[in-house]
Every structure is written in C-alpha cells, then in structure tokens.
Amino acid sequence: MPATSSVEWDPDLESFKGRSTTTYAAAAAAAATECAACHMPVTARTPLALSVDVTGGTHEDGTEYFSFETQICHRVCRPPALTFTVGHSSPIEFTPQAARLILQNPLTGSSTAALVFTYLPMMSFREPGGELTSALVTALLRNGFQLAMGADVGGILRDTGPAAGDVTCPVTDAGVLTLRAGQATMYHEQLDPADPDDTAWLAVARSGTVLVIGGDNLTFNSAGPDLDAAAQLGTLAAGMVPVIASTQDRSEGTTALPGSADDPPVTE
Image (cartoon, rainbow, N blue to C red; front, side, top):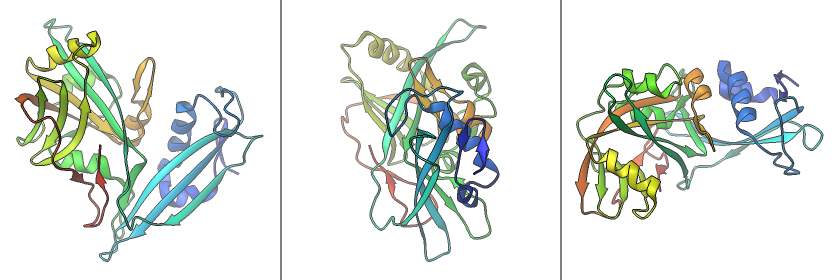
C-alpha cells in the first residue's frame, strides 16, 4: 500500500484525487484526533490507515460529481480502504463546520470580523477531460471570491478584495447570520446574543465588512481553524463581504453547487 508519512491509503484513491492524493491523505491524518474504529487517540507517529467512502455519478452532459467521506484508523484496527457508491439521485445533507474570529490590523489597530467555513462531506466535480474540482470553491469563485495562496489569516486579510456586489452578510437583531449570493444562501448560523464571544463578534461585524474564508480540507480544533492543507491543495477562497441589517430570521434559499443541474444544494 502507498503511504504518506504515517498514513497508508488505497492506491485507487489516486484515480479520484490525482496529484493531490498525498496532500489529501496527510491532511486527513493531521485532522484526526482518535481512531474511527477503537476511538483511542492517534498521534503523528502512530501507523495509520485512511478509509475513503466515495459517492458519485455522471450527469447527462458527461460531468462527473463526487462526495468524499474519510476515516482515519490505527493500521492495526483497520486496513486502508476505498469504496465507491453510485448515488446522488437525491439531495445530500451537508453539515457545516465554521469558526468566527476577530482579527486586528497591526497598521491601523482596527478590528475585522472573520467567518471561516466549510461543508462535510466534501463535494467535487470533474467535467469531461478536466480535473477534479472543489464544488464549494468553484461556487465561491463564481461569486467574486479570490483564491487564497497561503494559510496565514492575517495575510489573507491583507490581500483579499471584495466579493461580488450581490454577496452580502445579513445579520438580524436576534443574531441570525446569513451569507447570501443574490437570493441563494451559502451559509446560515444562529448566534447567541447572550454569549459574550458571540456578542463581541457581532459588534465588530456590524461595523462594516466580514472577511469570509471558505473551502475544502479545512479542519477545526480548540486552537482555531487550520487552513494549511486547504491552501496547499488550492481549495481555499476568501472575500470581503458587507454586513447589512436584516429583519429576516430564516434563510429562504440555497445555493446549488456547480457541476450539473442535478448537483445537490448546500443546506444548513
């Protein structure tokens, strides 16, 4: 079995991930804190195995689309594996993961609110003759976000320009935060106005714009979001989004991931 650092992976994974396979495997191992089989801790020096469940289908125009779910196990608990299931005949339920930060500009001393988010499972698509592409990142780029070339949040803040003009972050008095592209909802979250951290973030966000960072291969832990793998794999995008006051407490739409007319929507 091929291996990247301490993690072995099924060689068939390369037919989906191509040149990014080793980085993908390393990122999955770095994000794991426990074995998916025995639930005991894993460390960087523990021999590990990567299992990937791929669900995919081909649209009538020839576009292939895939979702990926990964598990990291001790190698003694479970060998590397890859399964493929033909699917996507019905919408997939995506689970959001996010972190909110308050960043300080060292030059001006001003504060900027940042929202970092992703969805699981990851959805990718491949047009005929093309390479596998992140559906979420493609959706962000189509709405004026820019690829982030590094993982340093301060550098991303410095280099990021505004998203498209119809991309906004409505925030209600009750603390409902929504990321909208036109009439489509890309992210939705209820913050707690009674929580000091949420209140502080909302106060900074309402003062102007939010730095929105999204993509695939992001991981979240107690220290905050880890963007290293996403930056290395080119699956990280960012944009400055204006915050507007809103009286609407619930999202009314979803944004379809690109790749085909039947691609599942991003849902909260």
